[in-house]
Length: 144
Image 1 (tube, rainbow, N blue to C red):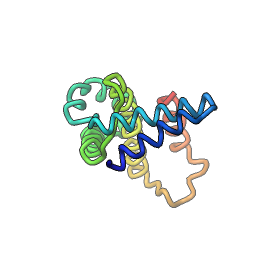
Image 2 (image 1 turned 90 degrees about the vertical axis):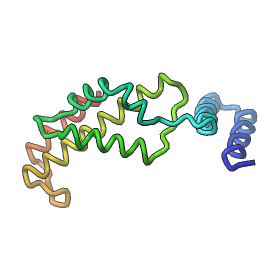
Image 3 (image 1 turned 45 degrees about the vertical axis):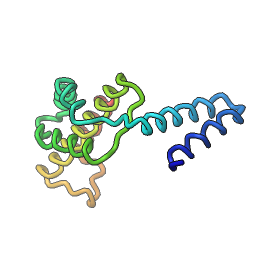
């Protein structure tokens, strides 16, 4: 028995013994991810190609005043998909995972380029900086 199979059995036992509805729901979700991992349901480069239009749309939405570099952001996404085994439970779940990833990567890339362009170092105190305050508000609006 592999470690994954042992963990699945442990979760199934814990679900049967759990009396709390919310804990059971969380455990079933965890069990679903473990079963998907056991089946080898990982997001691949082909999924990126399939959702390319959506990814580009969301990356453009995360572009703050032209600071985001689309090529860099797409490269970062591709590297994450190739290097990390990102598990999905259903085909429909891929879209949500890639959407969150695209927004996060786009916003991070925009912030990095914004800081470099304006000479704002992460280690310095940037409290009250108007440029960063505007960007933080943009980030919040984009993620909502």
